[in-house]
Length: 111
Length: 116
Image: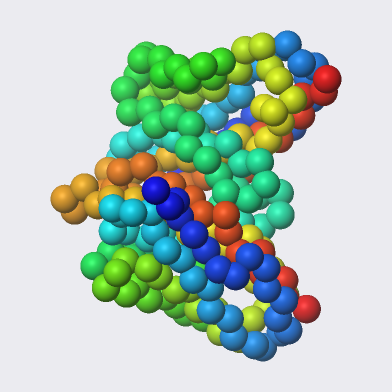
C-alpha cells in the first residue's frame, strides 16, 4: 500500500527561524512529489518535484527530492507569521494522477 | 482567471440524508478529482472524472458517486449519510496529459459537511 509520512506533525518556531519539514514515501511507480500549503481550506500548490537532487526555489521556500532514499524536504528561511499553516506532501504515480497525501505538518510561527 | 470554485461553502445534514456538492474547474482544465479531508488528516482520494467518466476511484463505498458535465464541472453525491462522513470535501482540477496522468492539481476552497 502506498504510504507518505511527514515529520514533524507539529512545529512551533519564532519569526526569523529557519525550518525543515520532512516527507518520506513508499510508492510503486513513482512519478512526482508535490508540496501544498493549507491555511484555512484550499491547499495551495507550492512545488512539484520529479527529479532527484534538483532544488526548486520560490522566495524563502525551497524543496529537494531524493529518489534513492525516498524522501523530500521543504525548507523555509526567515519565517514570518504568514507562513503559519499546514504543509502537505503528496505523491503521484505514473499510472493515473491520484494524489496520496501525508498527514501534514502544522507549522506555527510566533512573532 | 477564476480558480476552482465549489458550492456550497458549508452544509449541515442529518444521518441517512443525501447530499450533492458541486465543483467548477479552473479555466482550461478538463479533469476533476474529489478528496475527503477529516479533521487533522491529509486529504483522501475519492475519485477522478475525465471526459464525463469516472477514471480512477479510491477506497470509498458506493454511497459516494459522482458526475462530470460536458463543461467539465462536476458533482459529488453522497447517499445514506453517516456521522463519519463529516469532513471537508475538496475538489481539484487539472489538465489531462494525453492519458498518462494529469498536470498539477489545483484545489478549490472546499465544502465543509457536518452530519448530525
